[in-house]
Length: 102
Image (cartoon, rainbow, N blue to C red; front, top):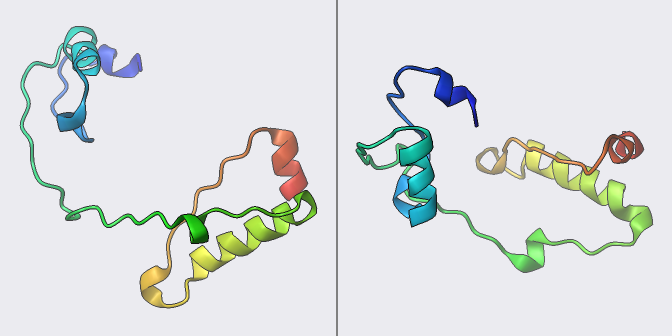
């Protein structure tokens, strides 16, 4: 959060600034000295994110956790058709957990 402060001028910020709360906007204006805003529509169109609780949450026995995770990663990377193929980011609690997965 300190890196932007080392620049003389900030010319653009990515993100959804319209939804900032007053305290968040205060941080941007005070800490980063941003005072002018121009809003542009997304190049990607509207967000079509769908969260399907029945399909997107898995409850499995601990012994099947890594197997289930690996299958989900593979399914998302390969996709069932070219339109569903996507990048995957996986975050682990600790190096120990990563080592257990690998």
